[in-house]
Image 1 (cartoon, rainbow, N blue to C red):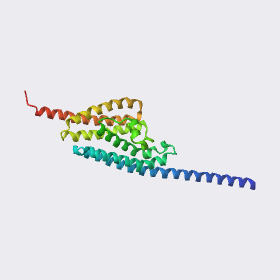
Image 2 (cartoon, rainbow, N blue to C red):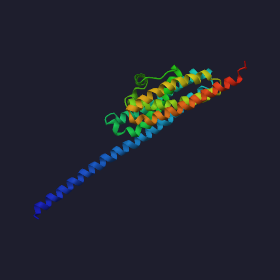
Image 3 (cartoon, one colour):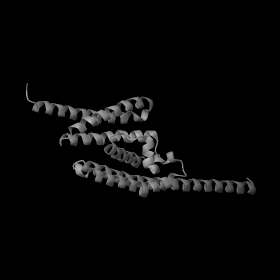
Length: 230
């Protein structure tokens, strides 16, 4: 082997090593960003859960419902401004799907909190476009699938609301929730046939609906027991 050939091989080896160092730096950068997004998502999940708990507590005192709904809306806005703004800034210039698994848990929980708030305030389901209008920052990252997943989780909150209401004279509310979740379940059955990932969520809605229907059935039985016999 000539001296020149030896120099060329050494240069090639150095070039390859340099390239791998660049790969390492890029992977480290992406991993660090992923970890920061996971932490931010965890903070959003915690804050969203607290907002949901606040909304549940509000229903124990109807006189304070409007006050608590306003407080919940302020908290949801605060989550957007203080926390979602950080995530959007981090992924705005990158492929959002590259980091979707990092922030998705927080997004799903936030959708659940927002849809629950909207249901309590308006007695109906918020649309995707309305959600984006009310929450433009997370709306930049939201897909139709994410929105549907959050609605499936909403059925769990309404199931808990139904059970709590059944023990505190909220019979009519239980029946309204039952009708509402039945409609949602029918939509999920149709969607799950087209979107494979929603099959599990459809089953989740079905389970919550069964518990709601059982609660309503028990209310009917209870009412029948106290009616005077003919």
